[in-house]
Length: 335
Image (tube, rainbow, N blue to C red; front, side, top):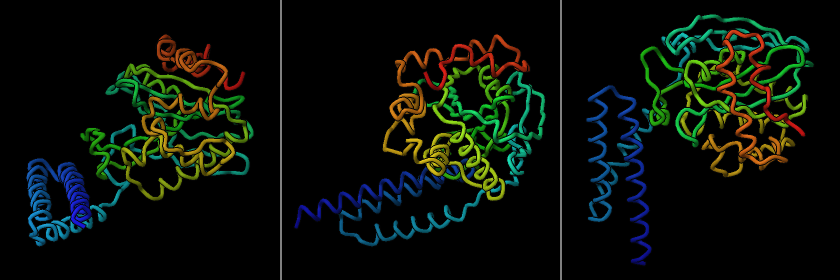
C-alpha cells in the first residue's frame, strides 16, 4: 500500500510539473512582455507549492493549484481565432474555391513576384481549372535548418496547364514574428495559400535560398482529383471559420495527412505512429515505405535527383516554363 501511495504521489507530482510548464508557456506567449514573464513565474511558484503539498500533507496547496489551473484552462479555451487582423501582405487573402460542374473556380490565387522576402510585387488572380485535366500530385519539401524539419507543399499537375500548389502556413500579423514554441499556445491562425509554383516555390528557391526537394507521388489522376476536391472543401471551411495553427497538431504536414485519409483509404496513406510524419524532413523515407514514391530506387538517389534549388535559381522566377524546367531529371512517379 505504501509503495502504491508513493507511486500515485509521483504521478501527481509529474502531472503538476507538466501542467505548470504548459501554463508558464501559455502565459509567456499570450501575455505581453514583463506581464507574461511575471505571471509565468507566479504560476511556477504555485505549481512548486502544489507539488510540495502532495508530500507534506498540506492538501490545500495542490487543491489551490488545481483551481488556479482550471481557471487558466478556461481562459485558454476562450481564446478564439479571427480572420479580422492586420495581416502581412502575402497572407492578407485566403483562397476560396467554387465547383462549377466539372471545373473549379479559384479566387485569391497568389501570384507574387519575389526578389527578396521584403521586395516583391503584389498580385492576386482568379483561375479556372478543369478537373478532367488533373493528372497527378507532386510534393515539395523545403529545408531551411537541418534535415529534421521541412515545409511541405502539395502541387497538382495538369495535362495542359501549369501546376496548382497549396501551402499551409502560419498566418502572421504585421510585425509578428514566428516562433515554433508560440505555435503550441494559440498564438497564430492557420492560412492556406493557393499559388502557382513560380510564387510559392520560387519564394523558397530564389528569395529565401532554401534547399527545396521535389518528389513525384504515385497517385492516379482519379486519386489526384479526389485529393484536390478534399483540399477545396477544407479551404472553403477555413475561409468561413478561422482555425488556430498548432506546431504539433495542425501544421503543414498533419493537415495534409488528414485530407488524404478522408478521401482515399486505398491510397495506403495511413497515420501510424511514425516519427517521420511529425519530423517532416524525414518524410521521404516514410513515403517510400508506404509506396507513395518510387520504391525501385534508393532513397538517397531519389533525394539527390529531387534537389531542384540550384536548377531553379538558373531560371527567372517569371519564366513561364519554370515548372517544367525544375522537373527535368526528377524521377517520375512510376518506373
